[in-house]
Length: 104
Image 1: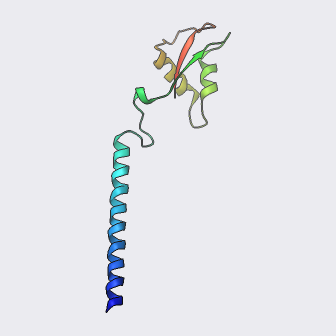
Image 2: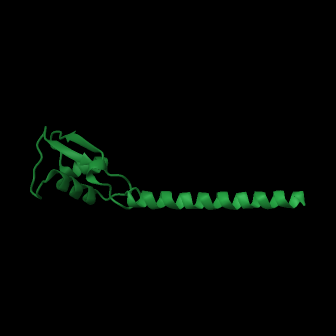
Image 3: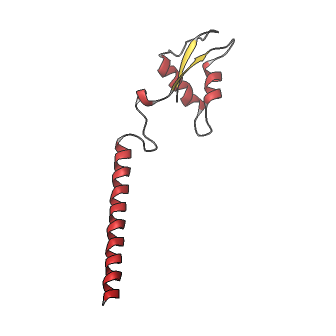
């Protein structure tokens, strides 16, 4: 009889621990999603890392975007982001020594 009680007790403990682990994982995933850390959601502006880039001679927004573009991004989207972050219009011309905000 004693062997059966121990086996049942171990089984109950295992099931309780598995249930707690599953609930904990679900809560963490839910909280992470709603805090904006899941992939595909944009981070709030204040959470993005920003860098200041100093423009070199004869450099364009295209050149800057080409340097910071990853394999998964399109250069045109990065250019659009630079234009929006710096409040440039389409005809803006960069000069050597200008500062450009880059957010990642």
